[in-house]
Length: 271
Image (cartoon, rainbow, N blue to C red; front, top):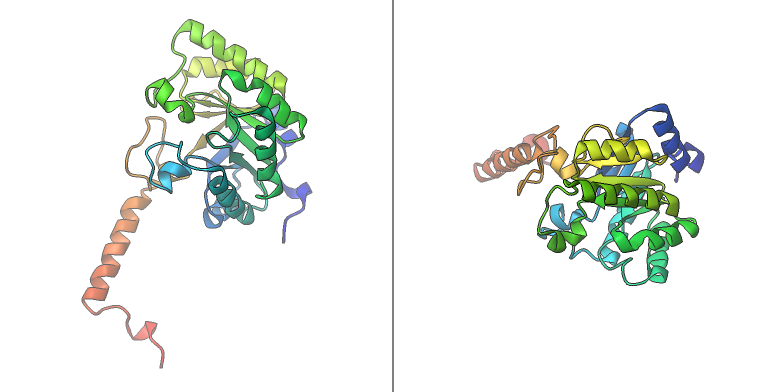
């Protein structure tokens, strides 16, 4: 049974948190079980990130994940959430082709998959797309800084906007996206002083990932934070657990018990 909307985290509540100086928490999830755990822990926003291409599907970039796959995982997450605001990433080519197609695809995340908002990487040409999605009544979070869908253009996963001219341009883009109707801004891999300037300049909340401590909130990829993803660990990640090691040890113990005839034991058997 769905929880009433009055009991859920809302966009106005997030803006109120910013005004009151209370930090906002956000983590990624890709299935109902982890979504339920994040929700129970009190996380404000659950992001169904296109990062699932890396940590779930095993790709090298976020580019291969499709719209239908993102809709599928968003449906799973929405089933596990009763309180948090579910934000769905719009994958590569789901919003860049035309504004009309972007609005239609954004609407599918709400209508078919149960999300409450969408997120898109707001490269220079996307301001009008953000405006159109917001004008359709769909809350939209814009993503600036390191934008993983542009990894080939950027030459890899690198800190962005180190030069003064780049910083001024990013600040102007942030202000334009707020004016276009974005309800929040995700800032990835930018200098912390720039993130502080942007956060102070905007009325909407900023969510940082590798953007320092001055944003209104923080987000991490769940598999990074739990120590599950082993291929690489970005500098900005703090590991709160080392579940990859624990899973490996548990599976090895199980394998040994089966091979040595210790499992299943009498207590695991029926008569």
